[in-house]
Amino acid sequence: MKTYLTYDDVNIVPKFSEVLSRENVDLSTRFTKNTTLSIPIVSSPMDTVTEYKMAREMLDMGGVGVIHRFQSIENQAEQMKRVWRQWDSWYNIGGDKDRTDHTQVFEDWYKGVYHWNSPPTKSDYEDLHELLWFADEAQRDEDYWSKRPLCAAIGTTGDYLERAQELVKNGCNVLLIDVAHGHHKLVGDALEKIKNDIPRVEVVAGNIATREGAEFLLQSGADGIRVGIGNGSLCETRIRTGVGLPQVSTLLDVVTICDDFDVPCIADGGIRNIGDVCKGLGCGADSVMLGSLLSGTKESPGQIEKIGQWPNEKLFKKYRGSASRDSKGNDKNVEGNHKVVPYKGKVHRLLSDIKDGIRSSFSYVGANNLSEYHSKVEFVRVTQAGTIEAKPHLIRD
Image (cartoon, rainbow, N blue to C red; front, side, top):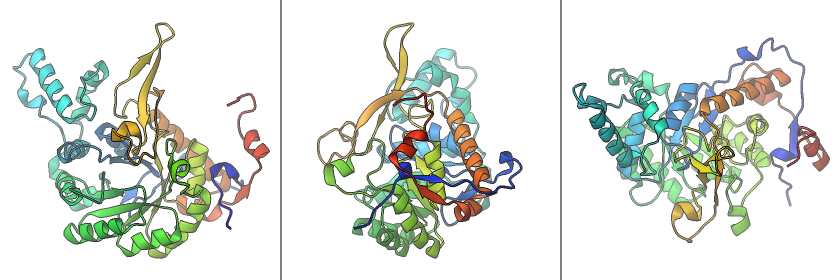
């Protein structure tokens, strides 16, 4: 029987370094075969993590946000459109209209498009001007968009092909097949169907946790592989089914087959801090997908909830797993949970912290870019005492 390790089981060994400045480290990577990122960060396609605001901020920071699929085709297509295109439906009511009309049009749009179907907050009104910053449609040539990944999630049953076609029509250039078990005939069939019917779009597929699963998706035409089963912060798959593998060993197994096919892989799940982001990249992943780390931010979907009374009130936002009872609305095949998380403010600050942490890790091992980082990272297994020692000594969980 094999022993599999996860992030808390290992640390990265420091190496001789000639990196003169962490600011000069190159964090660029590939998201798919032909799509690049400036930073190796992907936001998860969860309905409490990524809609157009998060995707837009990820794009602005050099990463990519995956618009979730738990909404109608029309709403998801509208979300995708907002990531690249100037939105002016409310703006076009004209300068001769009074403020009340502007507000009413905006509220009507918000209720029709926004996933939570609830009135906009004061913060949303303050952000109206941000809806107008996107690229001119005339710039949508092939080279321009090949450098800017616009990604949305789809399933493998029902209207998935119609959804894929509508998303691509509205600017999507990378589709992500978002299912819990990617080593499945339905995923292979969907991959082949999409690649045949929409050949110009790239497709990321997953999730898988074995070399065999990765090889299956790669042979079916995947342009990127999403790795990780049963390790999400709200995931109950291992508790309810006993299925899943610790992430470090899984990544070390899978990246070798991905390298053979020259296809990038995404480490998805199990990441609780910036150190885990670095370890995931150190295992050979080309990028990491984040859910819980980005939840509770201003750009994540949902309303801010206040708990307690002033001056002791605290702010929270909802965060839930895609297979949770709260998300599904029923008790069938539940493999996730939900909770409220502290409000974290703008995601830009979190992403900046993550970038700084990755740069520092590169410096510690003497790597100037991700390729060097992959080759230079060496892991050591640590004991439980070593895991405790790794935390600030005056902090107790």
